[in-house]
Length: 235
Ligand code: ZN
Image (cartoon, rainbow, N blue to C red):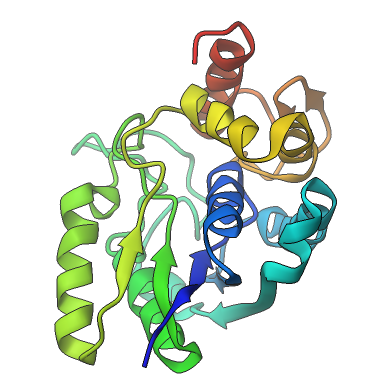
């Protein structure tokens, strides 16, 4: 009922999910992507999705044939129930629980649920996400246990045998750059630098050696530090 050669990648247009997309294209015969619109304050990331998908064709000719449909799901209802710096005009900082104000509680649980619903319809056995426990922002639903619990719940609740993959779970940002290089060489690294977007402020005015961004928000800092470590041979 599910095709073992087929994968669905949670794809936002950022560095992590682009690396996950390359990982899936390297591994599976047929790869589709899913993205979510949920009232993000900055739509820049979403506008990176199509160019990144197209740029994948240039990285590896085999990937062109493997990359299938893109699906965008409207989850703007999240903005109605969650108060977060990602969806409202609140400054990004740490709250009293040590979580960034960009935290939308349960967001990744919702994403995985919708991804599984789509994978069910499309017959994709494999679901790939960029969740990471290593230098993550403290989001509890990015933890390995959360993803494993979701796999169990989805498989029981949908009577299917999905496999949830998180290739970045135990690696840091520098190793994420190194993984991209191992999958698609310098072409993929350059493409990620130029085309993907991570900055919380949606700033694409300044091009740094690690890509575009404000250079000051937590997402830019992580990306910049990781790239520095990677390019100095530390990854
Ligand atoms: Zn930034």
